[in-house]
Length: 601
Image 1 (cartoon, rainbow, N blue to C red):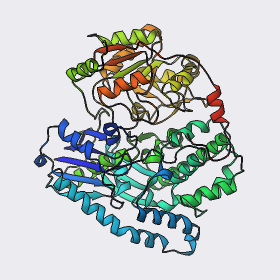
Image 2: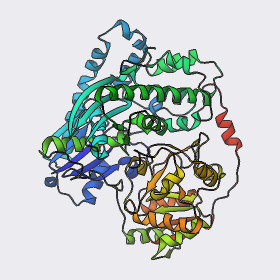
Image 3: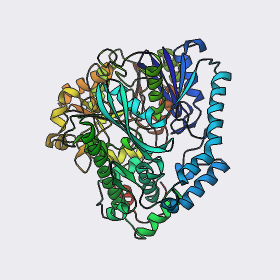
Image 4: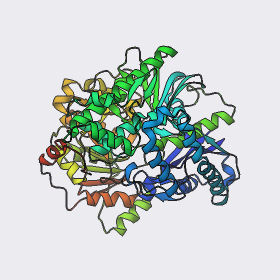
């Protein structure tokens, strides 16, 4: 059975599941070159059909994630995040109304029901329109099923975890009127335990702080996570008066939503509040709330395995805190934890609902790796090099060449094989550099036009991981995908300072030979030359652009970033205008010491 999964909201995309195995997954952002592309994923569906040479009759069922949301027929501009989004007139009126009356919600118990009832005609229109698009534009006459948003997150996490039994958590900004769900799952049987209302969303609250700190809510929450380590959580009591953990869930006790949330936070905070201290405060709050949520439900289920998905689980420090809860033996975070995972979860849910198969992780490994996107042939790469008027040398053993260049201190962009699924570059669309240069955060981020507070993440030989990190037991599998931070050993802090954050943690990708033989060969040879088992691995893209997809994208980013070398398959290009490695920490100091509202980055 072949299932096409679709997500048609932010980070829209599609996925294919064949007989219980995830065979491809693509987000439209990589194809249309708009980060977090928002709308009906026509381009990724076309790419799936092209990649797998499919005819309409090959697809047995279409699984569409999320029951209730508005149709975005095309793509809309998400460059300015949630607060800059150009909504339709009707939806904008509803959002503003919900914001204005949110503080009276406790006096009107039926407010949520009335709010969603007012939106139901738009929800029905979307369901009808998506079925029409599948039928008329893609000639798909197969059944079409809609799957609840958080169940998509839950199934994406459970079926790709390899666990037989686990308690599974979805926590995000919101979807289908909820911002979280908890399920207990044993041998593929899902027992629903609880939901968290969208109004009580921890993800949205984190976005409000992101916006107040001068970034773009809904897009730049990772910057707040990185900045938090530089501050002190002095505003935690203020935040706890607005949202808190309560009785196995979250509670918006301030009764604030969207614009009213920004206004109330500004009213309560000092006029010249410190961005880094507010970041530290919301990070501490989020960690404590999620830890309490997980701890409570594990006490109810008696489970020791935890699987996580949803946008809040993109927060790698929260994931580390969950791993360290006493009694938790193993944690898995789905690699496409945010809404890019909705098509995957929808397809897996519908496959097991329709196929009659029983999930058996020992028989079917749903997701062995995340190299699930397009691949480009050698002649396509050669043609792109020629059209750009560039010179390249061919190396049959290019991995050995790259290892030597890296050992000599070169910055190497790597474009190879199938593109990764999810937000992390894991070796096939990556920029690589030595991890022993503590100044790299300044000059390489500057070259890529990024404003990041996290250091670069390391790719580490799995066999050497315990030399580098503490408390790895139980997260070895999820650490293959850069979805969790670990505390670093003293050896790692001393020898690889370029990948260690100010709080002594790093977000690793552990790699074995079976994970990515070519990338493993580079790192293994580099280890032999230098004695260091890790390299910096950062995504191959410019700031505010998606990770590169095709050879043309790779050459463009290579030029714009003035990177030393670009390896495309077995072809090697040298930059005639390499980047300048000038260290200027004043920019970061200014960013870290910002105060008050109104600054956008």
